[in-house]
Image 1: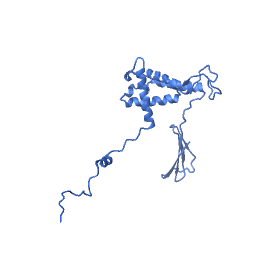
Image 2: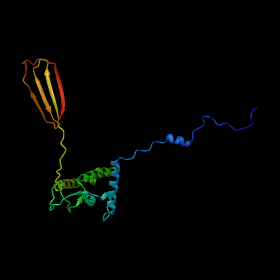
Image 3: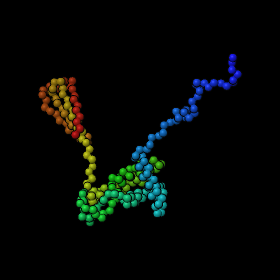
Image 4: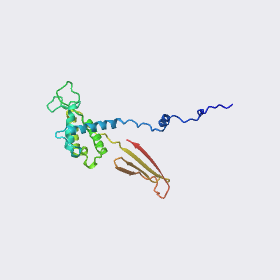
Length: 217
């Protein structure tokens, strides 16, 4: 006898809950910002706060290279690098044997990296490259003076990284062994070419073999 119940039994192929579908269809969360991007954001916010606290207050549009230099000098009070003054007995001493009263300042490397991040942040915030105050000539001159002054005061000379020189040696030998040619080409574009003595007066051969070896010095 058939049952009089009008209820329908649940189907085995029922639809999955909406929460499961949303979880499957949602995109993965974006990766966290890199350490460089986080630091750049903090530096940019610090500079904007400095402009607001400036007397009189400054807007980003009116900011110039001179204001950037003022900002760098303002940061010296938070520096941790001992920079000896001219009258200090440890001036030019890389490892002073005792403490002194010379001020602490921001190291040149920290300021140089800071300017690089702020220069990028300025253009990322719709600033025009040609009016970027962080790329002003006065800022570059100031950084160079800081680098040279700290090198003398701390007795730590600044040394540029030497560029590797690569040499390419080319030798060509004909089938008759008539001519031997070798050449060296440096990474700077200078080249020297020498022709060795011929083992045979005949230069009629048209088939040659070239061996090229590249060494890095």
